[in-house]
Length: 542
Image (spheres, rainbow, N blue to C red):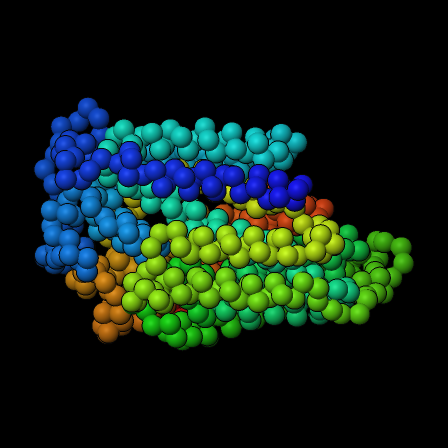
């Protein structure tokens, strides 16, 4: 019974938000009867509908067309966004081509202040009052104080369009937490018996394994599967912060470049027309970045271990080499992990639904069901051996609830003004998409720059628009730059990619002293940025 109560309490936040989304039809105004002024900020006269934005360098913009769902121009103007197919693709196309674009043009820059503040809170609170910040209830207070005013501003100031933007972010958040939560729970039921040797060469091999599988089970799946055995292998070592940092660099981010299953931006591209195997063409960038990072890590780890040998009594190398016979307990969870990957792939591919993305909620319910099966089928002894608790996933759920809501104005403004950023060359796309992906959700950032590149060639954002883009001369290097920037530079901060914060929370739960938000950025600035400069010079100069 105690396990059931713990599980229910940990999922209560997601269930509450899910019920809020299901209640949408009760509160959302019927677009057919919406007043025109409802989409404008309170107190301002309703302006004329803006003309379609003309990307820089083009004299004319393509005439809006009815989309694949039979919407005419009136539907688009009034915000009938067809959320029956909501998801990564549907939601982000919604922001790019419907009411979100005009909202972004109208929205003041100060609307991004709550998002900036929540990032600063994550960075500063652990430094000024670590004891207060370590309680998830206090993180919830900060998230709520910043997110609720943003939600109210969208609802009151922008009416129906504001509600649809908010609804989209809530649904996107639920999908995000459903996937992270399922992978967290399932991986917590897999126990690698024995102890790997925490030597530099073994640590490097574990990171290399993570880089190899991240593209096929996702960066989140690979991270949750390998972080606990790696921490246990290095339990006797005094200095292991750098091991977790490089794990985030490689396994949680840079390893996931080769397939759409590896990282959300690539899955978004797949849904928008990029062939499933197209990302295999990025193997050279993948190999260079991960190989350089593995070599640097091995040298760094050897230096740290040698220093420990001199400072601590006894042989540290002999101590980390002590291990028990290898084995796996809870192996059935590996099958459930593959089931999660299959659900994610099938939902986006429309398998069983005539090629159309699955309706809202089906994939999330299946993921939750798989997680429930894993949690209650896994023996308690395995959870205890893994030091499993819901604290890390609760921390991620609480903080990212605030992040998803508060970043909505920032994404709308970026989406509306993406073509004005002066980004034209492949190296500019690489750095622009990468820098913004370090702080914003990398999936919509990927779409914004992909849409900007399509606009430069007068390709309408309809259906599989990236398939049409790839048929144009010189387009592949541009999309490669956007893909690499969005995936690689998610490693620059703790919030750049979902697994980053999860790995940090698990490591801290196991007693590893992780760097602060800015401390982590010092690592990424010193180690990753030179690697990205090398990638620019070799692949994206023009």
